[in-house]
Length: 77
Ligand SMILES: [Zn+2]
Ligand SMILES: [Zn+2]
Image 1 (cartoon, rainbow, N blue to C red):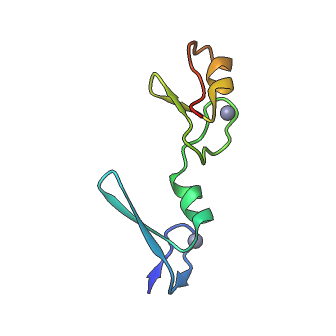
Image 2: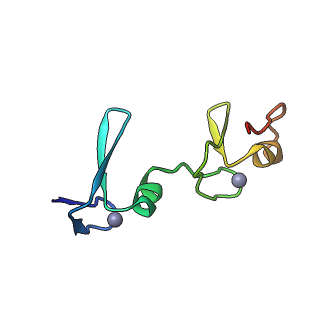
């Protein structure tokens, strides 16, 4: 039994996420998303899908990248 690092819930069905050499433990996907998802730098929404990375900045989609002045960004569908 492990403890979710976000909400502290001890739960038999926790799962691990290995990212960038670290191991994170969560009890549910909403906690994992809360901890792992990058934040769109334009609209501040959490990026659950692929997102768009431009010049080291993360956006939820091409429309937000363009709104921040990043040109030539298109959504990958
Ligand atoms: Zn949790
Ligand atoms: Zn956005």
